Amino acid sequence: MVKIAFYTITGQTQQFIDKTGLDAHRIEDANPQYQMNDKYILILPSYQDFMMDSVVDFLTYKDNKKIF
Ligand SMILES: Cc1cc2nc3c(=O)[nH]c(=O)nc-3n(C[C@H](O)[C@H](O)[C@H](O)COP(=O)(O)O)c2cc1C
Figure 1 (cartoon, rainbow, N blue to C red):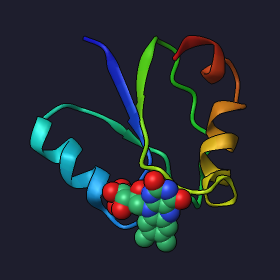
Figure 2 (tube, rainbow, N blue to C red):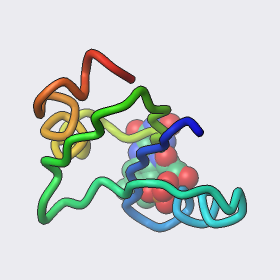
Figure 3 (cartoon, protein in one colour):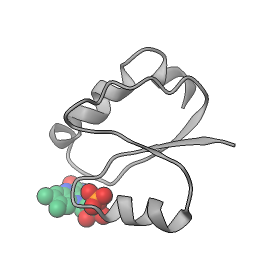
């Protein structure tokens, strides 16, 4: 099954993920560096770039940017 990673600030994306019932990795501000290993779908809300630093940290960690 395809993996999912997501980011949320106010919880809307978390609610969407919960409704799908799918297993997903939440990108955490406290520790965004997490290795996905397999191909994955990245689900993001729209924010200005300076609010997405954790997503950048996640994407630039290991091979995460190459495999999504
Ligand atoms: C402080 C704040 C800034 C936002 N900035 C943008 C934006 O720049 N562009 C946009 O399309 N939506 C923007 N939104 C709307 C969010 O993308 C939208 O509310 C989204 O559902 C929030 O997802 P989340 O609850 O998973 O964080 C903003 C929302 C908030 C609360």
